[in-house]
Length: 347
Image (cartoon, rainbow, N blue to C red; front, top):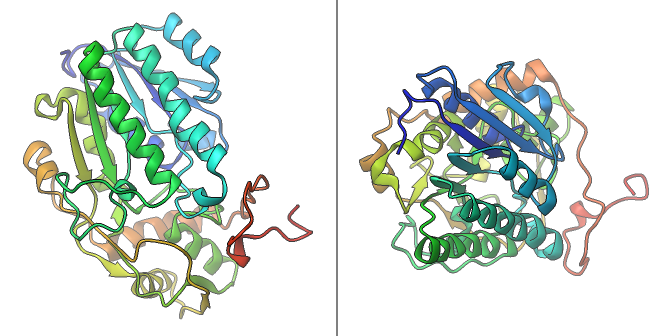
């Protein structure tokens, strides 16, 4: 395995998106040679080209992992040491209503990359999965917990995990899998109305709008600052103990969605105006144990929710509010939350 003092080449999918843009920066930061090559593949449906740093080590290609011809051409033209597969449409709740879109992007797109990685003998395949694979398992969820996903998004992520295990056993493709959860921070697409509740809250506060909360707001999550997640993902190919392992990664301390709303409002110096909506089908409590990640990666201290929200709020004020992204290709409308239905102005 090459170390960071030697030049290396990697493909990073979703690199213009939120998590991907941070992982790109972390990869460049650990490149001791100064000669690493990072090819970023992103279709820009949820990311922004301006999220990427101006660095000659980065090459950007606009396209989708679902485009198998493009994927195969990139692997033919480049000798990738590592693949970081971060691209996904991570709208967990919406995935019930966009099943075909979900599986095409999150499963078939991943398989395209796995096939190419096997054929070209990639050294390590780093995959960002999700704690959605656990479903409503007892908390805190540990890597030893038997997965039981309850939505198509979690099902697709678990399917990719299983496929990577199979590809390793059959072809020797080494992998590292991360299961992050409720990640927030700078570069998040705050204009996406279907996912990333921190971004939704910040965007709506800047637009002088109420904060939508499904159900009672007492659902609990451990909201994870990106600065505690991205470094480990970037380092994975260079950490021997992470080879063919799965790691939960994120924050330890759960809070309710109501508490989160107050924290976000405080960062903007306003009082939260909450809009309670009918409950949707979702896991009530979700947070994870991270002892395995800490033992292997030995990260520094965790950023507190207040500090992380404050950092993201400073960035959000600089970029300003963004228009909500409407998903116009809903496949099943039965039981779709009213707030997610397109109006005549949206269509």
